[in-house]
Amino acid sequence: MHKKGFCLPKKEFGTLFTALQSFGEVIAPVKKDKFLRMEKIENPKEITWEGISWFSSKKYVFPEKQTLFKFKGEKTEKWNENPSPKVLFGLRLCDLNAFAINDKLFLNQKPKLPFYKKFRENLLLVGLWCDTPQDEYCFCDSMKLQHKYDLCLFDRGDNFHIKIGSPKGEKILKKLKLKAEDYEKELAKCEKKLNTTDIKKYFENNEIWKKGEKDCLSCGTCTILCPTCLCFDIEDESNLKGTCGKRCVQWDSCMYKDFTLVSGKHHFRGERLDRFKHRIFHKLDYFKEQFGESMCTGCGRCIRGCPTKIDWVSLINKGTSDK
Amino acid sequence: MKKKCSQTKNFIFSKNKKMAEDEIVFLPIDKISQQTEDQFLFRFKTTISHDPGQFFQCSLLGIGESAISICSHSENFFELSIRSVGNVTNKLCNLKKGDQIGLRGPYGHGYEMEQFHNKDMVIIGGGSGVAPLRGILEHLSKYREKFGTVEIFFGFRGEKDILFESDFEKWQKKDMSLAFTLSEEHKHPKAKKGFVTNILENLKVTKNKLIFLCGPPIMITNTAKMLLEKGFMKSQIYVSEERQMKCAVGRCGHCMIKGKYCCTDGPVFRYDELY
Image (cartoon, rainbow over all chains, first blue to last red; front, side):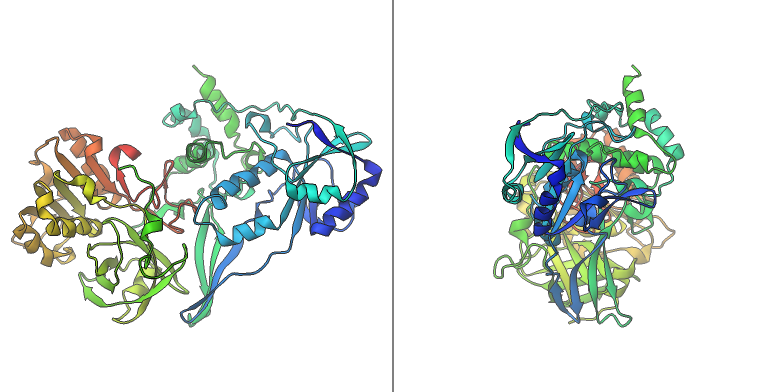
């Protein structure tokens, strides 16, 4: 981390907010019916400064359902809309890293998903630094997160220290003419730790996974909440005659049995144990082999949101320390 | 058999027409022939370079897409053997000559035949799994002198389920031995009763043999187990895996086998790459 940044007195936060609004609509964490959600705001007073949003922000680059192309007869017309620019404000480092991870899969290798690039280019990511973990489910300091943001805010009491992470962020901040200052702060120390060093060894060691199998409902909540779970399905929609319609990409979940269904009614991951294991290994091992880093950012949403509170991090820690 | 997916150079029409990476091209069906009660062979005329074992995404707008492996090997056309088992394939099998099918591909990496020159080839297929192997056999027929001995073992359910029977004689004439089994009671003069593993018992193990395996999941598991027990090495066995494939470009996650994507790393894997 570099020390350099800028100082913004909190009472002048409105000026930053206006500068952000000049980029696009501002979406920030707002407490609403007990949940912290990312919602469009008009006034900085609406922002909730504590906590981590219940849902991740992945839908802003990869909507739940996205049209690939429309068709009429045999004529196809590609999706070619321009998404409106948005500022995602108050993202935690885990979510910021999730964007970088999703970029690896969908942006940095060919063929690209055309819509992903368009959504991504129209986003400004503004982080909010965690001095302390947001709750007992966070384990981000085990995940080697990096400084990936356009701008990031650090709370210093009466002031914000703002760091610039990209030319896009610099362009916005330049408008404010802030005083430069040096500041450094380590990421929050989480109580929850994940020991991922040699997870491969434990693939066949089913003792670790058995509790997961017992409690898992295959409901898919973990994959919906996860900021990097973007496995998808492709589906066609048409009118009754089938003469016109569209082909859509929509979120899917590897927790569902039919995810691996092939003809002959064979499920390649028909057992709950296999599905439970597959998701964790994709996060911690498979993705690492492909791209050199873990796919999990330690946001803890999959445990926080799990209806049976399966704490797979403890399962792994327990399994890997029993020696 | 380590090669990054050959997609970019092999995209349909890459020779004469520029094609965007994910674009669907509509081709008219040149020929349809019925193979079994619910399986049909579709031929499309086009100059296209492909390896046996690669696959196409066949789509019908408004219904969906389905991954179908190429079962021929020619410079002037390609053939797809499609069994009517799902939404897309049911509809596909009701089409007529001249109707258009949306195609993108060929995807994945298949059998790179140049690597197998001078090897003794053992082809083992079960049911519809015979289709991708037919591409190899077509290639072998054409370049027979470049390969060693060829043994073919097929397994089908019943007499009416035999695929590509009209090709059997042609292959045998090219000095390839062929035996097949039917698991149901039958009166076929050439077939043995049982599963394909039953006729593999006398297969001799030599170091120069390569085994090409494709079929239903249970057949692949059992056959591979038997071959390994007989003394073949994992590196001698190539399997063509079947998975649910949606995007075919290594994104959607459906076809993942452990850390590998069946659509881009496969569908043809050397056995030791996976297990």
